[in-house]
Amino acid sequence: MAEEVGVFKKGGVVAETLRLLSSYSLKSYDLTLAAGRCMADRLLKRGIPRSRVTVLPNAGAERGIVPMPRGKSPFRERHGIGEEFVIMYSGNMGRAHEFETVIDSARLMQERGEKGVIFLFAGDGPEEGTLRNSVARLGLRNCRFLPSQPSGDLSASLGMGDLHLVTMRQGMGGLVVPSKFYGVMAAGRPTLFVGSSDSEVARVIFEKRIGAVIAPKDSEGLVSVILQYRDHPGTVVEEGDRARMSLSKNQGQDVGEGGYLLSILLSEAHRISLIHKVL
Image 1 (tube, rainbow, N blue to C red):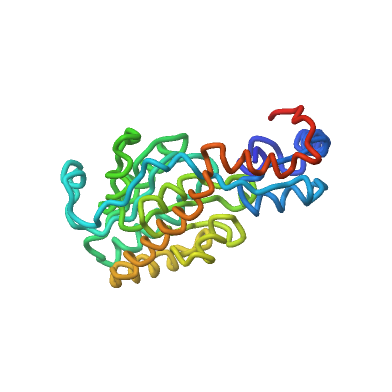
Image 2: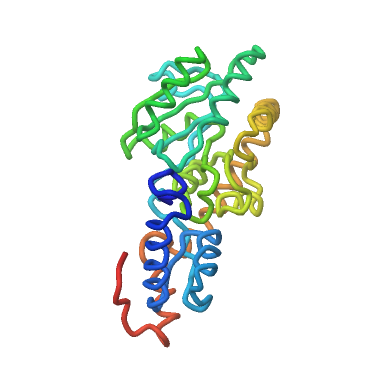
């Protein structure tokens, strides 16, 4: 991950040495939990035996989120938003996330005179300053910012969005699996994922039919998808309901509260005597 964000030189001595050490360490574990299938694939390429890798979804923290009706609401009014079609990014604005495609899509929509569509960024993080500067430099009137919202307001906050953005930079597939994706599902909204098509988020979107996957730098593609959803509100409702239902089925396994993890550990008990290393 440090390579992909430029902290270490890609393929350099430091990176390769650390990779060798981490691979050696991982091979000594009795069990390694991967947050997605894309992450499990990376572990297998490192030479970790398939029998020692189990996928545990990066979900659970969103249990308190409930779906809110779309459209005008007191929470929207509080933040100066009416019945506009809102494309929302909620959460950490970190180095692993891709924003160039989103900003360029907002620029294209403004230049083409598309009215009633707002890109809403709620949160903070190391890339927030760059994002704000880009919006100011381009004079984008269809982009707005809100601070991070209290956990008690997450249902209403996420409910402001008609569609939600989850983004990932090139090269991050298998290194991160954004947990915000599961919060969007809990809120009953479709996800627009800007990132690799082989990542866990993309795979779930394809399998459950709960959004769209757009390749990084495909600004035209993102604009086209947004307008298609805007013009077909029934699809927004249908996919949002499907997302919530899919997550509810998974929550029956007690993901995130320890029950599912415990069942995994018990099923592996015949070969787990001690988890002796913790990252």
